[in-house]
Length: 83
Image (cartoon, rainbow, N blue to C red; front, side, top):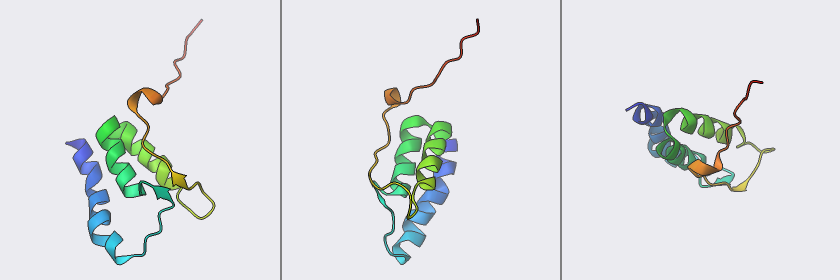
């Protein structure tokens, strides 16, 4: 349910605003498609974080090209060990 609520603005942009503007995303898949896939694969919290990081890179001096959503096992979390 939370994932669906987070994706509501993305779907609104994708179907209501994006068709009225020229294509300008520097990545494949587009940032809106990346956000949808990230939330569906990784859940609302990690997916939202991945989508936010990706959108922050989408500017003229940012990255470009093929940048797929990482698979679940590709994301590594550093675990702290107390000694």
